[in-house]
Length: 141
Image 1: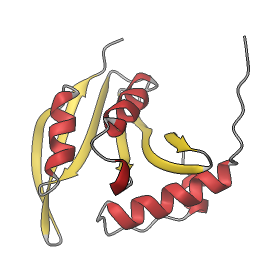
Image 2: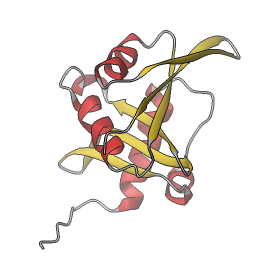
Image 3: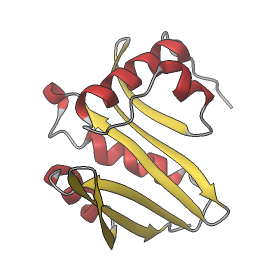
């Protein structure tokens, strides 16, 4: 089986992913390259040369449940289905029966993407100054 290598190191990708998520996802938690590298999650990225232009992460939280997180695309690369493609890759690489994601109520593009990937509404929660939706689905094996 062939091995593939990229010209961008994990530390560089982690820095770019943290910057992208901090700048564009509107969450209160701020991430660093170090925090992403230390986390138990897996990240899927779309590269243009050495630049990360889109990402999606997945982390197993329980034996039967994983979270899809940090789905983000740089503004100039949106509307090309990159978020869906990377979220699908993240879901496919989960080993749990169920996956979920949380999306801000005002993030209509992400809500539409989640619906197109088969996610359904689970609950609505108030967080600081906005609502978030938790959406879930079974992972087809």
